[in-house]
Image 1 (cartoon, rainbow, N blue to C red):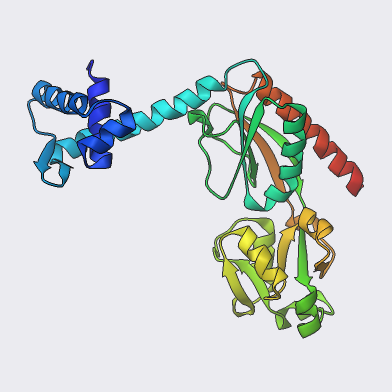
Image 2: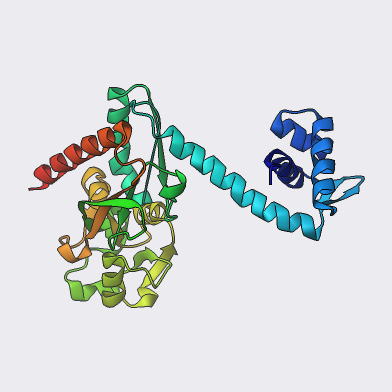
Length: 295
């Protein structure tokens, strides 16, 4: 069908609910919007919208068409991001995604990289959602756990994420330190709300600490970190947080079994671009410095 402009117009009318709202978004005259809707309905031989005083509401046929249009529009937007990333210069957006508890470690590295490459604009996206590299949602992903297996991605081992079991000074003043691992059952803990979490340190916590002793739960590592700082209980933070934050005291020595492997993930279409290769080299050099400092 040679009517993508008309379909796109219909999509924006459905999203805005009015012709004027769609016209403003598209940067066209409202008469153009009406002409596109009329032409599309004429071509398809079906009404796509119910017109009423408050605006336009999609019919059943309109909803079917607009569901496909929304997906297509999203894919075009993501494709645009991928194409922009194919340039050979070290410039433009650099989008990096990772877990929230790695943000503090990566932010200074990204700042240093941006200073050395002033034509780059950095975006650091943190959270548990897996950004879709094949749609250009990110240039580089740093992921933890099992080796990622999505097709068309280039996956490289990065480093092990050391985790530390810590408490705040306020908690220790109130409850004291555990005298042994066996004494952990007599203390309060901060933990993940998902009992199915496969992170090694979360599995260890479930094995060693009764569920009723996990008195504060959250899904965001940053929230858990703040709860530990506030004295809610003992909990896990990244080794980086434990090292730089003087308010934390490690409760027991960090165990290798708590660590999770980290992976550098890039899409095959962007992996060899100058910007991605430049950043990967920069990041790997900083990781070698971190390893040397811990040796």
